[in-house]
Image (cartoon, rainbow, N blue to C red; front, side, top):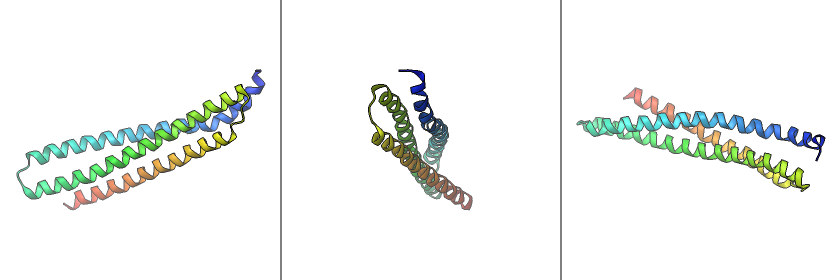
Length: 144
């Protein structure tokens, strides 16, 4: 196979490569968000265990509950972002394998690209939900 035949494949792979890079940055952000959320849960749980006031314990339990919801949303966001990156990576691999083996894989390429975008959309949806919940938690904390 000559290089001129691979150039169109390389050009077709640029979009998915950019998607993988962007999703990688999203995963980095999500990882930081979940680490902060888990640390905050641990801090509040320790404070709850040492608190003697029932009112304070109730407040801390409410905050921990909100943080648990956020942690689950972030986990789902991470899962969908990882699926998106995996789909885009498989798409790049299939582009090259299909070209080398002279296989028609248009349906699979379209399926994987659409799957990557749908998974990214779900990931971003969970991230938006987490940000909204974060602001609700802040409002609750300030009002107390």
